[in-house]
Amino acid sequence: MSNPLRTRIATLILGLGITGSLLAGAPRRLPERPVDLNTATVTELMQLPRVGPKTAARIVAWRQEHGPFRRPEDIMNVKGIGEKAFQRMKAHITAG
Image (cartoon, rainbow, N blue to C red; front, side, top):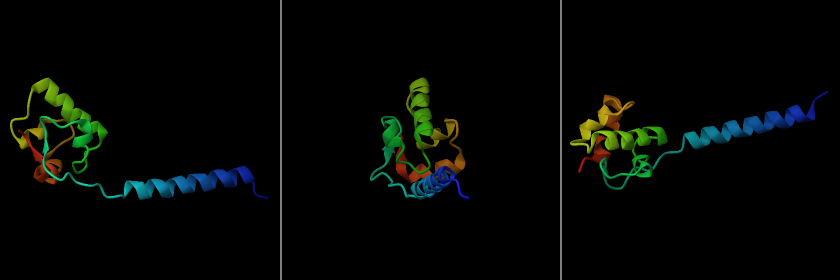
């Protein structure tokens, strides 16, 4: 005998898993023009490759604490952004 509640829960979980994987794989739209690290909002920074809300917030926090970025490479001073991340985003950022 099958438990109808278990069947419904299993179906719901499976459905959520499929939907989540489809959303996670959706391509992001890159910014049309370079994002200025010194004036961009969290939302604007999230347009950059592999930059989510936490990383975008760290970029803004670093800027508030240390002042403006002098050059795009300075973004590597932000926790969680290393050489690989910088290489992915360098064509899409500017510092001034």
